[in-house]
Image 1 (tube, one colour):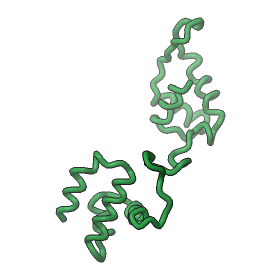
Image 2: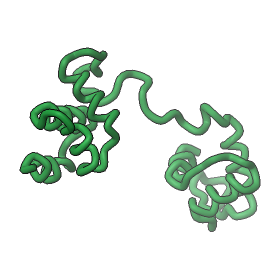
Image 3: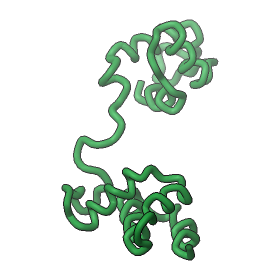
Image 4: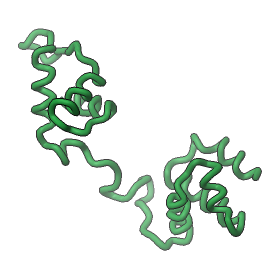
Length: 139
């Protein structure tokens, strides 16, 4: 399908909504079995294409103009699920923190990967490295 090549060339410039809608348009124009075929070729969940179809036909609530997701959508912060995460991070980095305690700038010798690993192993918090980085910057 030439549409697949067109989609692949544009995919990086599409936001989530435009991506879903483009996939839905391709599926609708392809006829029977197209949704499954497109999902396989683009490595997309068929539910994503179905959601795009519902958005196209306005069968579901759309985000406000200028927004990609509905209010409250997206990944919740780890602190909302595990409020103790900041205390745990402080315990981990306390022995590895350097700098003048009288100045706001300090640093640690631990990588974010290592901090995330310790959070998971010692405290049982399911943290991936990218979340660990985000939490460190918030401290």
